[in-house]
Length: 355
Image (cartoon, rainbow, N blue to C red; front, side, top):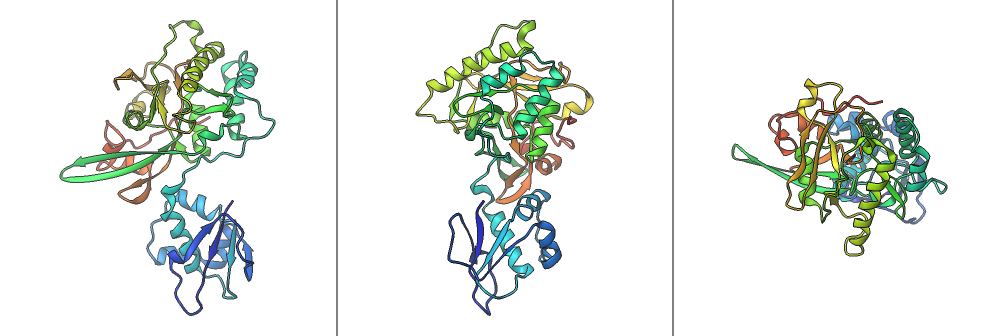
């Protein structure tokens, strides 16, 4: 956890650029105060100061930057003021697009590898399997390479206006295990949504899946397994995981883990049509090397359908629109902007019911 270090000139106004983030210890400060978001509000009136300055701060930014601001190191005997804390917040928001990471704990040293975990859940019924998957992800049993998110840029030109946006996605599908042994984990949309919520993430739309494929620096050819009743079993999940693992290892070292990769799985997606078919899952993608998806948007399966071919790509809720911070949900809800992320117009509720 880095600390925010303030350089202060007595008698001069604090400017956001006078604050800097540093990962290494600096000279001993005159004072140091550990604070949480409630203390910030109570002692400094940070939110009221922000309101006075008419700064727009999304809820997600309060959660991450106020809630996770652990320590202020201060090189002055001056009292900490709300304006100074606003400067910290502004600097944090300004550097938002520099380093996006997945909000999961560090991986426990004794956590099972991907194959070990797959063996443990192979005989479990769906509900127990999903609970086990959720526990592992929430505990941080996720490969290190999945934690640094990749930017995907999109542009919309309409009515003489051009909007440019960047959203941030996991470099591969959600997996359990380590970098050396990870398992791309098929799961139901409700479990995926619940996990996404804990990480301030969401699921992509079909248009976003297309954009991710276009941006991917490594495009793997789809490797379907002939359909059968066994396609919803962990044994077949494991077979397909092994096939993809072979493809991925063959792409090393020119394409290291952490590069954006696509083409090897279908995506569980959100779309406007879900509102009219409750209890269903929307599946899309599995792009061939010519860029055409094998799976057009399909809503024929119930939400409990989980087969080897479908996986979960997490998208961070926070994104950048025309140089300013916003959220995926806000863009999708805006009829004038939804075309950046959706082929169906605005989507007012882009999510599944969460377990």
